[in-house]
Length: 242
Image 1 (spheres, rainbow, N blue to C red):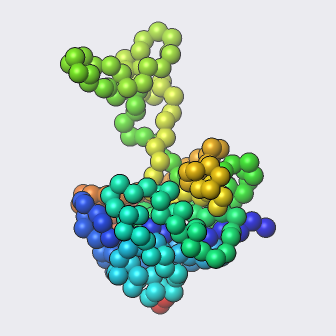
Image 2: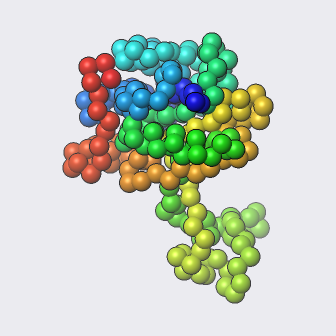
């Protein structure tokens, strides 16, 4: 039976919402909901919070999860998932087959979301990674690049018979999906063998409703609060110690 750990990134730096991973929403820090969902999913050997913050450490220990202390270079604005994931995997003494990345900024991810994604990954034994995606709101077939000569060119030049994509109805264009913050699942060996997180054979996980909603801006935060107040979206339940 394949094994899997959960990695939860919670760095202190955030330009648009300062310290957002540790701010309270619905009565608990944003980070706490990622931990609670991971615990309730019941599939992980370990849950590890990767942080450079004393607030992140405090919350992780409060909810009885392991802490990976990030190097300063792995917490900078231009640091990649590959940087902190590689460091986290190297510092963990055990070697599970897979790991999942559960970002705190997707607070409406439920335990069943995680379990379904894990079943999806296991159903594709040749896949190296899984990434949560949702339909794009603005189709790239309608997007443009402005060149130095002041002329515009379509971002994507699809070979579609007849009219160019930007003159066709959006519903007639191929569906396009955008990644969201809900979760990733990947083989533990990817960073070493493939030199990236998800490898070369990536399958989609189609999130539903608000599962993939990502808090990035103050407007997102206000919308999340409104969704909670109206019951349009639900946060994972948090017990005494998650």
